[in-house]
Length: 412
Image (cartoon, rainbow, N blue to C red; front, side, top):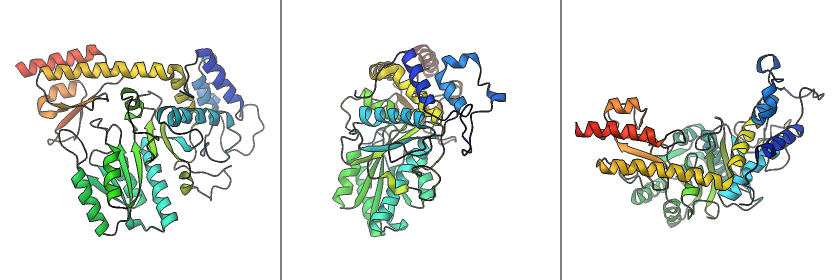
């Protein structure tokens, strides 16, 4: 790992304090032009003694605005310290985890994975419009029926069609023949440019699409396309559990990746991450943001520098090997659950390298599903699946109690 290290508590504390010194200090500096300040001291008690040992909370009180994209051009000098922290996070994500080359990517920490996915589609839509004079009705999104609802949101907001690709009911794999037919039909209707969204851990199933399914069919049709990886859930699991994964920037066909820190990484909400190859993000440069140094290339504009610090703290507390160990433990718990379900002859889906188990709904009594807060695929009588996510708080003890009740219902 080039950037991802394990640091001591004192090293982390000193790093964040140094970053805050690199930012404007609203308590002491004569900063007259910024429409912002530290959090209100009458409410948030910025002199509380415990803050000296809580660098992330210190950052929230300081209230830095990490507006802009700090891998591209210049940025607001008032928040240089926390911008540097964000760059370190992006280096870990892009270079160490997803195999990008140093200084050959752009990205930022977004307020969530939904925005990060919309950002990707916005970038590629604009690229097609800028470089090929594409019209909106000539551009289409390709994504599976299991894809996250941020994709139909992007379709609606950006006014380009989403072509939904069927998947197998049991294996959740993309139907390649259907994909081929859908692209053929789309071309006949005037579609020329495609944005493919390949999932690395779908929300309901944890299924992982094979990006080569999109690549091979799109190239057979000789169309212009971009390939985005939605790793919002699986990005902090799959690259560690599957050491041979090729779903990263070593694949030249992959243009962008999203990954959420507020899921597996257990960061505060509002920490989606978007990364893309150099030469792409400028397609969404907002030239009208002239008062922002470096202008802006993000959908959200202003965003919390404290969220970057929170993600940095987690990454550099664990280090790469510590994180691999944590993922390995969750994989063992997931396998434990699957073994128990196998003994009961209960059908389920599980991507081998993920920590989500999705069970046929007919095997789960309503009372058990409600007691253990299982998430249904649909909140109606037609629901066919319930999912269990093996997060850090889900202990073997919880799983054993669930299995015992399930066993009693089967034998009863």
